[in-house]
Image 1 (tube, rainbow, N blue to C red):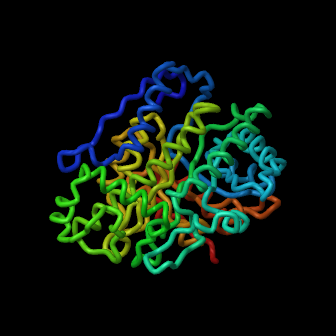
Image 2: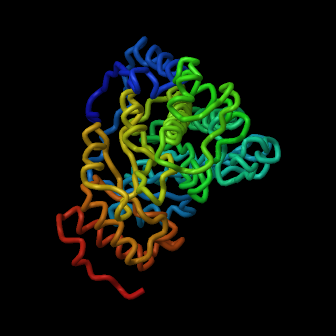
Length: 413
């Protein structure tokens, strides 16, 4: 997207066929896609809030920051983008925006692009007390509070209301022009599909209903064909349970497709909330590849999500794990061919050697930038760099000046 020009958008979306059916996307997501298509093309819209974008490389940080001294120090070493988190309100639905607004203004003043990060995963205890059925559940009834079931309507309703409150506040305070982009977290935990990678967590009532409806749509109500394909003997779609463990069989692959669709539906629904308020220059997503056989269940499929979101004009940058063995240059290149900028990430709070790993692997894979971690890890409250902060500055300088990152001299830890 050319950030120096007014950009006109007309969105189109092509269906994906699976086994001769339009089965990669169920009727629910098609309805959402159709509504979005109407929304975006019925007023081919002009995005007039177009400040010049950065060009790669991107050096992206995250965190609550705390002090403006950290922001000035970050800008001085070349950090040029920050994901500023905003989580859940209190039990009464109230936010304290004082620090958030202050830090947003300071980031913009320092020349650091601001990505508002909707941290939907850090769910407060009061929500679980009000909606205990929102916890993902396995076949034995065990639950986790590490993330919420993406099929529970109370979860989606709460997240959408929270996002709308934040965006309305920014609009009222005239802060939206200072925001370069949004980062919408869906279920970014590794165990979003199962934990600890050996148990499916999709047996809460809403998940079961969604799974059975999905299968009935996939098979056009033909239970006989499903039983033939799966070597089962179900008497009703309502008898079907998620697979109990991973096997390389059609049933498990079908469940993965169902799960990915659930995440995509959530992403689209939450992105629609953003579009009610403004059209960000940067749609920023965190989505990781998986490395079988260790993580068969993690539902992070960047190209699947990004290709669909990009077709809707809802994806510009993706942060994906650059941990050795998780990706290849080819996988990164395929993401870039979609028209995305790719940010490599390994550590949230890296050590000296960990930061070197971050930079070396991200650049080696052909990423457009690197996630440098939290500013709290790089600088003291007064802006003085930690040892990791000093090393980060050297690595940023080396990357920007096309020097060998491996030759950077590391101070003693």
